[in-house]
Length: 213
Length: 213
DNA sequence: AAATTTACTTGCCCTATGTCAAGAAATCAA
DNA sequence: TTGATTTCTTGACATAGGGCAAGTAAATTT
Image (cartoon, rainbow over all chains, first blue to last red; front, side):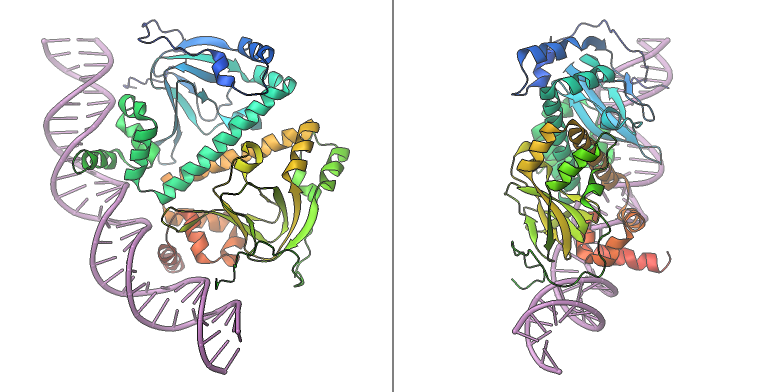
């Protein structure tokens, strides 16, 4: 295999000490006005805390997700593989975000995306079955889910639009502004494919920005 | 104004005879295993039938949608306007599809998209208030909505991905295969911006296809 | 039917980005 | 520490697609 992201499906329980303890609790992921403290408690109980080491595949295309992950610390990327074999990064999820695959979640169809940790992560994991149960029994949780999905939908529409309207350089600058952490932690090739360009091009764009700004 | 798509906000009730009566009923839009005939009936009742003439703006950016539209016949496009003034087609909705704006629907935020009829349309319109009421009272309807949204989310993710991975020509061919009607009915410039290219480029792509295939 | 507007095509030239390949720098593995 | 792998940069060249402008065809308005 020969990569440090070796795709072990069982990278659970790393030992390296975290540099920063996450200041998040699982309840922070479920902010919604209608959710009562009791609801929140019940939801929180349904999660299991896990440490996951860098390079772990959380989900592979063709599978159906069995859980989703609230990211307490660390970084996850999702990617799709091109017919021609290249992988295209479709998203980054970091602290405070949820790594989730919608096709599996509500449609029960196998995913076309892969999810992979880019660093050691601390996550709260919730099985999809449990999720559905809570979802059906706690209306406020359903509201939360609806809002989450609406937001995701907007985000993806906007992404498609920007791929059309903005030149690569602008997309890079926007990413730099909105998620500067990413540029530090993520290999350039993943950033590049996320922006829809090659790594060579991104390298040149960077150079251009560094020079004439 | 000087365009046949004159953006009248009150193009309700055209008189031109339809060439084809729509074979759809409003219930056809709400296929879901959990929806009982009674539910369906109640939902159907909440819709109002309307004829809308070509060129009508159903929704303008900056507004909050007050309703959505099930398209019995005709064609609608959504578009966003670029900072530089150009409009970019973000989607086409035709017979059997729903013209809806998610930001307004569940987030209550003003839309950044415009919706415009590209032909005379027959629609079933449902006010958002009524929709929310039914949505909250009929669990199966909520399931339907969730599924609709999941599907929409997948579609938009895929669109963004294809903008990255496929060349314009392939995107055109795909559109031609998946929605051939569109190419007949829609001005080239709208198709072009939907595909993320200029009308000149699309014209050349067409030419190329017509020649060497 | 004349005038106007819109739709589409085409030519010329330009730019952003891709492809391929090489090499330096950094990181990881042993 | 050495070797292997990955990361990033850079060069030479190719190409898809954009910008602009002209021109014809088609449709709409008057």
